[in-house]
Length: 249
Ligand code: AMP
Image (tube, rainbow, N blue to C red):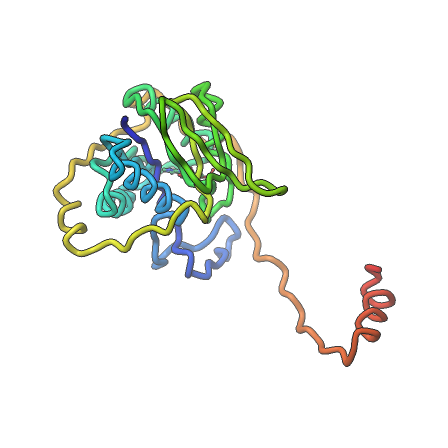
């Protein structure tokens, strides 16, 4: 079984991003970029399935600027077998990415697509669901456990009331939650090996997809600053403030 793993290049989770002065977006100049953490979990899960003999090939795909090649190399250092870059300088929204992935799904015919549940830059949490809808495939989002047997995926997912287990016919779409696994450290020998793995570059038009944005960003602003907190002497004072000052009780 082949597994397709989409990986997005995002501002590193340790970076405190700043809004550009013209409010058109966040400033990414000189900012450390990394693989979206949920996608690292997706690659790790695919590699574990390959190590267990369930998967035979892992294909990582990244859509965006040429620098996404670095993200693909990281995926290959974790254990993906090859990479596909869908190169474009257009701002990509989830629907455009889902359309590109649908085209690649048709071309590659994987048994499973494992995406992150959300990209930590825009926090959209849409691409996996849109891909499932476009491809007409079963989906299990927010997976905390994935088992494959008899042509089906058994996926445990975290829901408000506890854990839910779904059984999906393959091919299927799975999105990862934080507790699915802990990705391995990338070792230097594996980084070197990854440099020799095959990487293909396509353009959206090669896949017949129009990626132009369908939603316009009007402006981006910093969240309002929080004022300093105060200490209250006891619970009675706290309740009094909640009632009479904050008026939330
Ligand atoms: P989102 O819907 O934007 O929160 O992204 C959810 C998931 O879709 C990510 O964790 C990735 O697995 C995948 N994805 C989103 N954008 C891209 C992209 N430009 N290239 C590759 N994968 C992506």
